[in-house]
Length: 133
Image (cartoon, rainbow, N blue to C red; front, side, top):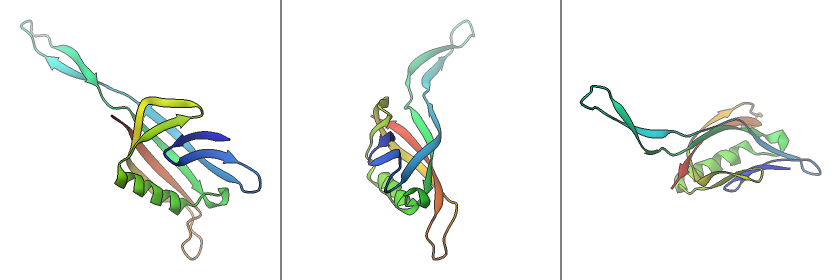
């Protein structure tokens, strides 16, 4: 079952001959307005809306080798996304999040368990995206 997709990362839960589970947790989305402050003759300040800041999204990717995901390959993919700077729509189920493309702003990669020989068995990636115009 597909949970969502961004670029060529498909968040999914699939059972069968080859189990594959790539999910995310703690998704946060936010938007802000831009405001300017003006003084006037009465001494009271006035504010004026001057626009909207880019929307932001953060989430934690759960990466486990026993769920059919190679954590190191996902990390390398995130590195490529930082380098190429390309954006894409983010779909959550069949719903598009926002109206624009999302680009990778940053990520943190935390290794959980490692097998002797250096194979990463589990990791989390805290991912930060920003809308792109």
